[in-house]
Length: 508
Image 1 (cartoon, rainbow, N blue to C red):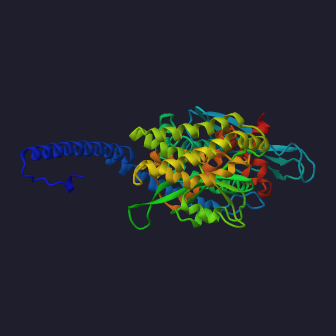
Image 2: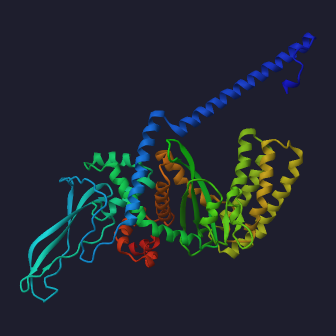
């Protein structure tokens, strides 16, 4: 290091040599500073965008989340309709604008029949009540008119009228398809509600952002039992995948944000031809404490694929779950070293790990016992040789180098990855969970942060439903429309009838 040199030698030749060294050092440091400044500038631009845009979005997201939480709480407290069919009085009042006349109308008539239910006499029409719901058919709006004729008995003068069917949001204007579209737009297409409001305005429909925030809150509260049912299914599998990702949440009492977490737990048995449909369960917490995954997976005793985060350690132990490490994270360390330094040792490690993945590609979809047999015969020798080779490389390189750190990380994780060699239910990596958190990572670039813990909970419910539908190749828009049309009257003991694969089966 230059700091160890005597930079004031008496000999002119030595002085010139020192000057050359100093010049080279200054040049290298200048290039490094320039590189870091460029990276910092790009990272800040990518993370925050322009200052004005960030502040505007922050205020909008804050309002949006607060309204979603309030609506969810109101929905949870909503009393059931009376026996006489009279809707309960709403606790919140929203001004309703007339539905535009230019929209197509679709009539659905609900008739009490032609025969009096009291005496059997003929019913005559007295008039009718018309209730309008705003529906959304992909690409266009329409107004669905529910026409309910009022009839009177010609004998006993009794009045009969078909009851108004229950709707996802009582006394509200949105139909199931519109509610589903708003949920999918916000949580699958990553559109903040103010942008969705602007899109609707171009179609001639004035829907305020606050109105849609109310719909999101009430819809997710109504759908929460279904998300809980998916969570129970995830925890019933022999193995699951776990990961988390940060999201910003507004700290209470000030305008600053804190780092919250979205956790995902995925059950996906397609790699070994399991019969259970794939499911993804999301949970939101205000911090990253290890107590959260322990609580989420309380009582689970299967295998958990994880990335080595110490917060997951509380899951593992006697009479608890077993840990399966992720070789993709091991590989990633060597890729970083090779990309920055061109290390031949790192390259060799990457190639050896690639050989393991080549075997996994061949056996995907096979039965667990067949996968285990092939891994024992072909993958185990490669795995053992890789571990032995890494041990041999470590003494020959600087202990503080990035390559040494990558090797030590690999040697620390490989014993916990070894179980996959003898268990066909396990995977070589945790990429299934990483793919599941990707929609959250994409979404936060648009909505930037969660305004509250309640808003984060609504988000987790929506992601659970939408991503589970996508895992099963089910259109989340169509499925949620189907669910919202009936869940208000559906027995909670029969929620399994509303799961996405049930929808796919009946739609086929």
